[in-house]
Length: 116
Length: 111
Image (cartoon, rainbow over all chains, first blue to last red; front, side, top):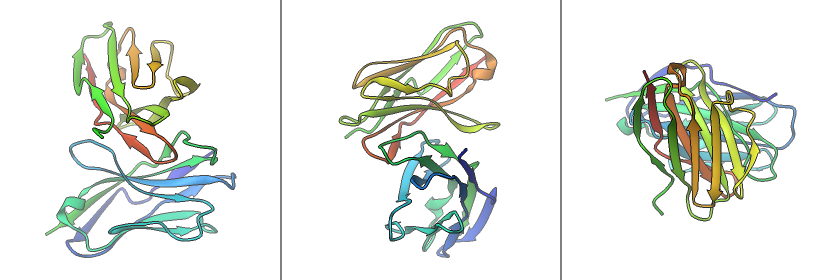
């Protein structure tokens, strides 16, 4: 079965510092996809970044990058130059199989607080 | 595009009443997902559709829950009868390939 583990329930970071949010996953399927979503206090779920298991390079989207270490089964999110608006819950998620959109399994989330 | 649209945004109802949640996916997306988020259980997939056909409903908690997608631009999630333990935020999401885009959610409170 698929499983996503986020070991940091909460993190506090100074504004402008880089932050790494940890995510490890467990699957026996060679084909899978990994996502990060941001959920601010307003409640919406915002897609940040996607990494496919066969992608050769780490995914990047603006200040977000995904540190994909396949052998270690980790998919950490790196946010460079953090901003106050980055304060939110962050969820790592995965699906198994690459035949199209599939159901996502989510981790429990990490609450990130950016201090001024 | 307006994104995924959900209505109502908030719903307060009494135990035993029927509740209908509505979703309009992003135009052109052929996958639609219904999720539920609670503090205890986190985010859980309830059901998903591909081209209006239900593909996996294994996450639907019990027979009180039903979902339909009569056309490519509309889906409903119905709870009948509702119970206090159904209180949660219900998200609809849509996708064309891999990335799933979520609606703003419906916060349901059953008293």
